[in-house]
Length: 392
Image (spheres, rainbow, N blue to C red):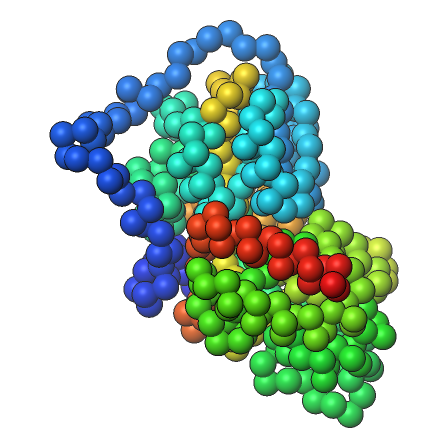
């Protein structure tokens, strides 16, 4: 392993690409109207008797096999576990309210929007003794989105990048060498025209595709200028005929089975696809690429909806996940890094040393940090991405 996760997150601040949304947490009220700091005692939720039920809404393929069974055995709480495959889907449910869920797992920038919208409730840290296991460096970075770490707890983190089936890509390209900028594999028709023979997939998530596409065309990753999004969309439309499918949750199986050879997706999923292909004896040679241009960093977080019916059970689950061996078990199962300092010794050495999971410092500097755009820009982004998907 090149560096500890704590040093990794700390380096984000040191190299000046720390999450730039800290100003979003500032109040614009006059000083006399700003409430006094809320203490842990003040936010303590009453210990009421709850039915032994917990409803969780999480990303697909984001658990170890024994995570839920062990929690149920340990607590006697029955878990209903549903999955989604994009922040857009989760956010739509959160805005509609009455989701019926007690734990949701938004990415940190979306969690910030949900905090601002009053859609989440504050954590009661007196009910989370394993909070002490979290790396102080990541807590400091999360505090820029969630001042005081009052609402969000990091679940796992990774980054959006290019994943390839090495052998299939080489065969499709023939004598053509790999590009210096590996984002060309999904954005340059010179390459996509050849790679369409073995299948190209793109995340169905405009909030993660556009920051990368904007950087590719030389525009700010979180631009508010509609013309910049039009320019990025025009670039992507040139490769649209070569794209086989848009999906998020299905890329693991598609890569593991050899149904696609190139994907714009999540690094953790590509590492998991490689492991799964070995288990299935298809042994596809899959790699998550650490691109010179950089990828999009995300942190997925645990949060409790404001209208959760079982908040005490939710706190028990959060505390359970923060147990060192449990959190390490998630990383070992899905190849996504965790923020749990105490868990490091229990992470499989092969994963701990994988530089596409725990990135080298020089690669950290290239990542696009999580960020948000205003609602008007989001509407532009959504409309243009729909046009891109439909090819119209």
